[in-house]
Every structure is written in C-alpha cells, then in structure tokens.
Length: 85
Image (tube, rainbow, N blue to C red; front, side, top):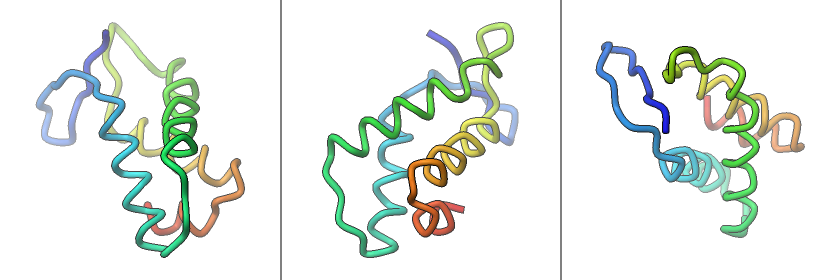
C-alpha cells in the first residue's frame, strides 16, 4: 500500500475510509440524501483519479483533495464539491 504525505510533512498509511468520511460530511453539510454505496463508489473513483500522481509509493494529501473535488464535480455533485472545499 502507499503512504499519504500530510501538510505538516508527517507520513501516514493510506485509508480510503477517510475519503468516504470526508465525502459523507460534505453531503451532510448540503443536507443532501445519499446511500453508503454511492459514497463508497465515489471514494473508489477518487483513488483511481489520483493514482497517476503517486510517486515512490507516496501521495500528497492535497492531490487526494483535488481528486475528491474533481470526482464530485464530474459526478454531478457540484454543490457537494463546494461544501467539501
């Protein structure tokens, strides 16, 4: 598996559930209904989107966040993407 480089330089293990949680919070902030399977699918699309940006087994948290925003917008959830930002 790969590692995530945080803003402060700390390195942690990648955990897809953190992406799912962030997306869920954005949906809830917009008071938009969702199904957990949709959240899981979006999180998987995010990982596919940022995969080319992984270098030496590491990905910057900013690259993950950019991918979340991009995937939400491409999926028609522009309002959720704005809440995520």
